[in-house]
Image (cartoon, rainbow, N blue to C red; front, side, top):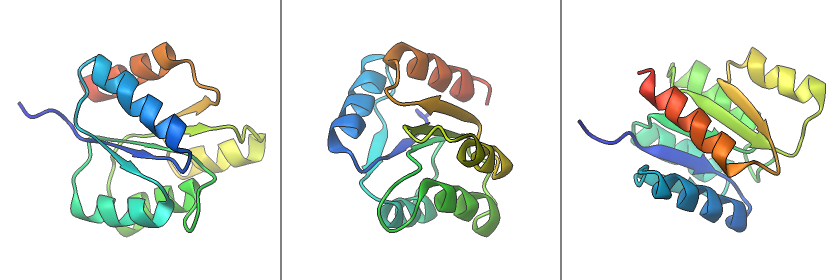
Length: 124
């Protein structure tokens, strides 16, 4: 069986690199990085991802707009984890209204992220 591809949508290079590194250490080596929401939309439209990890506040297209695009425009049910320092209750609820799968506040505990990724990818 092919390893599921994971897309990390994050404009902070240190966070995206660390996330990719942590996931690779536990065997998830098929990870792509999109540095902004516009690039993420393009990548998602061309590549089937098993999981998408996104920040909320990104250049050009926000994480919430990206989720709306995935769910409404593409009709995809791909699991989505939001990693964000924006923990405003209304913003988080908007994410769940747009059918995110999970939310983790930054700074993220790597072990918690890995556990969540495993849970979401193993339930498929």
